[in-house]
Length: 231
Image (cartoon, rainbow, N blue to C red; front, side, top):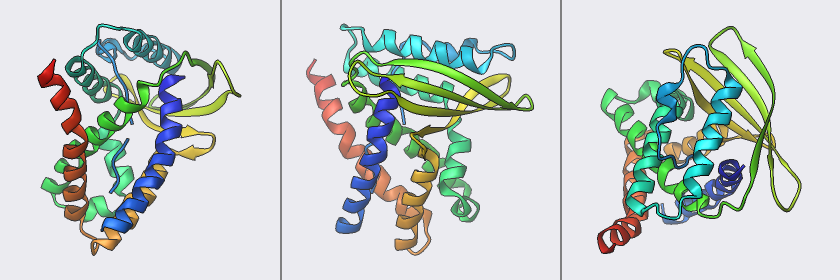
């Protein structure tokens, strides 16, 4: 569906940005979506992974079809979506891997917030291109009561369907997304590889990555701020 087509695009974008990182001595351009309602707040222990994803898709599609949505409302909705439905803290640890343990508490907190902004800005641009894709949820594999792997297809008006797997984690009675695997490519592992390469270039310091992400997210957000102020 729309948001995972965006994810596939984002994987390619990650690689393009990494090239820029190497040339200009970071990555920015992308994980997730828009939602006028924080539907995840209604998620409970009894909600199945399938129900979670279907609700996520239905609400996101409804938001994308809303012609009256302003830039400010869109960004606020996306932030609520990500905060409520993605386990940002867990993903941050996965993405930074061994560097997470070496980072200070302040660096970890800053990275998690910057990573969230990174996701919001990147996917905001991708979802504008939504053109009627549909999410078909398939088999669900669970591990205990806290982990789930959900297969799905992104059915597009034109072109073959995309295979997308969702990795979910039940935290506090609510399912949250921890990874998205598009055509066999893990977003979390891709980001971990790219971020790890940049951190090594910075002498193993997470502070260098944070500084670059901060600069890039600020620059990427500027056009939206100008539009919002002019509207």
